[in-house]
Image 1 (cartoon, helix red, strand yellow):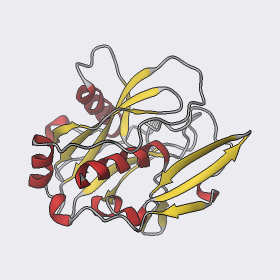
Image 2 (image 1 turned 60 degrees about the horizontal axis):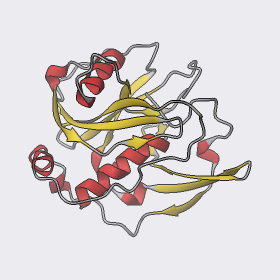
Image 3 (image 1 turned 180 degrees about the vertical axis):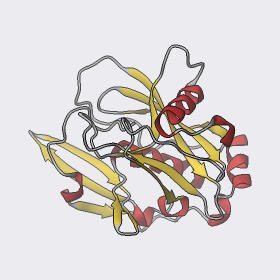
Image 4 (image 1 turned 180 degrees about the horizontal axis):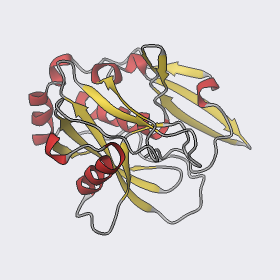
Length: 228
């Protein structure tokens, strides 16, 4: 589920100029991205503060609780599981997102929401997932209060996409996303309002995976958590 916009985009985010790239910040060392290191970090979390917690509000609606699965596939070089929404969708068409969505009353916690949604969207079986913990809530401009649930995913997983909700599922190297040299800041002004957001574009063969907005914001907070 993507959260940045709940109405058709009035601009092409890929065409908005970049005003800063964070090459001055250090990447997360490779030894901190192993399963054991990630488990230890969540078992004894550091004192830290998320960098991005709330987008500028653009939709007047009641707040809604949601959760996403920030899933780390434990390959020889760990990757992050991401999805792309179908182009026919009325909202968030074509955008890249984590599997996830709005919480149901039956969900006992954020992890239950994230696992249920991941199963519904990409067929991810919970037996292949080990939840490590959660990151602080991220509030989107459309009033979704999103809890990122960080989890390890076995590379033995088998995915089956729900074509109604997901056009594609793919993986981006975790080391790439945890390197601020790939974190780009954009600024856009419309009707007197200035918005800023991050992008982390990844060249996946011949296809550019334009990770941006709320998804990039939650990944940036994960970077801050691992670097604290």
